[in-house]
Length: 197
Image (cartoon, rainbow, N blue to C red):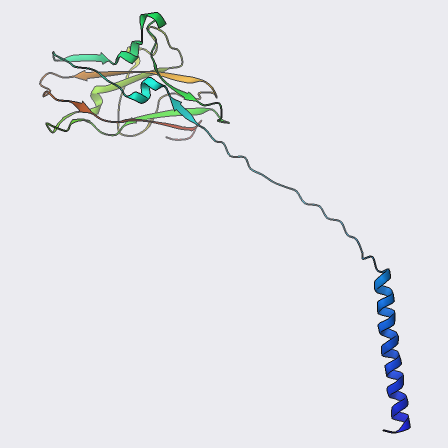
């Protein structure tokens, strides 16, 4: 290596060393350039509901034993619970207080009433209900009864949180219906007000 080349190499080394020293000095002084930003949090709280059935309704609807036909508007004893309570219905569905929205109640039968031992059926249209937010000796009233179908229909509309809808259930048995123990299942559904069953 020539003297000139050595001098150039030495100068480059000094420039490199100077650059490193300057970077290290500046790093100790650099605090960064602060920036600010904002964001908007967003949450959607869904409507949720909870319904409960009275104990008597949960136990089932029992029309008892019928000895003579035809029979019209046979009552479950829960329809007119007792004279002490004024003949009120003990069948009710409640909008629980842990709901955050009013509720429409829907009701349906799963099928015709079937006597599984004899293979006979009693059409679900012979089974009916009435409903009301008033509960006394006459309400829900038998004159406003609605025949069951196997599709949900509204049976209590815009029931507010903590309130109830009362029900009475009736059964008609036409002449010629074979003896047997007939049953089906009644279902209740709660939906947000204005929503289809």
